[in-house]
Structures are given as structure tokens and as C-alpha cells.
Amino acid sequence: MKLARFVSDEGREYTGRLTGERSALPLVGELFGELTFASDEVSVRKYLPPLAPPNIFAIGRNYLGHVAETKARLPEQPLIFLKATTSLIGDGDKIVLPASAADEVDFEAELAIVIGRRARRVSEAAALDFVLGYTCANDVSARDCQRSDKQWSRAKSFDTFCPLGPWLVTPDQLDPDHCAIRSRLNGRVMQEANTSAMVYSCGQLISYLSHQFTLLPGTIILTGTPEGVGYARQPPVFLRAGDRIEVEIEGVGSLSNPVAREP
Image (cartoon, rainbow, N blue to C red):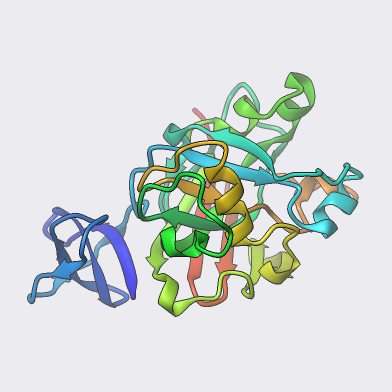
């Protein structure tokens, strides 16, 4: 099942179950309760971010290829950082290069996990039972800010730096630890890997995070990016106004965003 938040042709906002790429049955009740839907379809004009999360946790250095290309150290435990919830945008929305840090903005294709119910100190064996769904994410990053700040909060959290979507795929439809993942910049494949190459699996990440924090319903977990990012290339490739960056995950779909410069 695909769950989406969207605007209809009439301009109304809904969450619903997709019946086609441009049609859905609206959700009746709460997203984090028993999922029931209306019987009459509505049109889908524009996809919004699939939900409004209470927190966005992200994982660094979770693919060996990415660790190698960046000449970084493999962490002994999952490397956690936060992205601001105000960085969230949906499919088709513009990634805006901030005036204060426009020159070294990079892309990172990632599988995102959405938590469906409160999780605290859950086991690895039970961790996937707490998942509402999976979606595509782009962990957009200002590399010069990462370098100068010596930590990642600002670099990862500028407005528009967390494209997410276009919809959620429910756990019965996807094996999250065996999905092809790629990014394309202006149609050119930049990253191509499989989530089976992650150092820490989805279940391990959920369990580990739940032993550090309470994971509330709607929490988003970005699971890390594979090799092929722009700043590790020779010469480096950064996002520029007029570009289009896509994240595609097998079994989920494709998230596509144009790039613009802040006025």
C-alpha cells in the first residue's frame, strides 16, 4: 500500500491511499491508528511531504563505500545527527541554495524509515514492527559548513535540505534491507548501490535509536547514503541553480527536485 499526503485538484489537503499515480482514497481517522479509507476517490494534484515529523534523525557513514570515498573512519556505533524539521520539502519542490552557503551544496540519496508507533528500548528482532512505512529522502548537505563548523547541524538543516517522498510504502510491500538505491543529477547516475550494503540494517538502527531516545509516531530516520556523492568526486560536483536531482529506491519510487538559488 502507498500512503501519501497531497493536495487535490480542488485545493484541499488530504492523506490517503493511492489507487493510481493521480488518485487516492482519503484516510478516515488518524494515520497512526487503524487505517481506514473513504470509498470515493479524489484527485492528486501535488504531493506534499508524506507527513509532518516530530523529529528527523539521520545516520552518517552507514555504507562502507561512502566511508572509503570520504577517507573517514568507520564509526563503532551508528553515527547519529539531527536535521531540522523545517528543512522538509516534498516531491517537486525546489531545493534552495542558501545565500550564506551556496557553493558546495551536495546530494545524498537515502532510504527513510517512518516510525508508526511509540518505540522505546525495542529489540532488533521486534524493531521493524514499529515501522509505518518507507520512502525516499535526500540528505542535502552544505559541505563547506560541515568543514568550518566541525559539526553538522547547520550544514544539514537549511530550509529545503530534506526532500522526502513522494509517498510511503507500507512494510508488507518492501524488504528495506535489499533495495537498489540511486541518485541522478540532470539524468546522469551519480550514486548506485543497494541497501544490503548498509553497515547497520534498518532493524539495528531503529533498535539502537530507541535505546537512546523515545521514537514518537511520525519520527523519520534517514539511514545513510552510499558512495558517489558530489564532494568526493574529482573534480567535485555540487548542486547548481537549474539542476534537477532525483533519488530512486527500488520498490518505493522516485523523488525529484529542481534546484534554485536563494534570491
